[in-house]
Image (cartoon, rainbow, N blue to C red; front, side):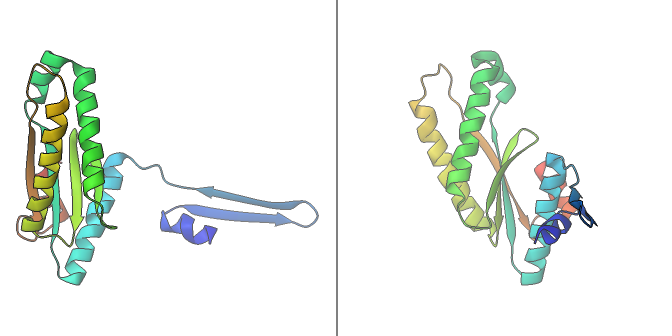
Amino acid sequence: ICKNIVELHQGTIEVKSTVSKGTTVSFALPLYSPQALFKELITDSLKEAVQSDSSFSIVVFGIQHAAALVRKIGKDKVASVIGTLELLVRNIVRRSKDAALRYRGAILAILPDTSTEGARAVADRINSAFDEYSAQMELAVAIRLSWKIVNFPADADTVETLFEKIGG
């Protein structure tokens, strides 16, 4: 079992045993960057969409005029808002293959087996939940989301094109 898990993650495992001295098990796993993990997730999702002849959508969320907001309310408050947005996305995208993650300052909702229309419905739910959250905050400035949908195969048909479209 351990060997399979290590190899699944492109790692190596070594077992040395000496009679009357015991056994040593050593393993190494590659060090991944968030970008590498993200690319692997997208690549795997794209392959699955091709094999099953289905669509695959990514909703890219951001805070409108984030740089101006930092000047008005401060970096810590904007970071808190982005953290809340990430939690909202995680709570709303709840199918087993769906994922939510931060990537280059944006929050992404990864939605396998989802058409552009389905992704728009998810984005609308997240936008509504964020509007409710921001209305409860006592800030002197309104905070609005920006978002866009990138769909395979409608908007992009390769991993590289998907990355270009989401800003990666």
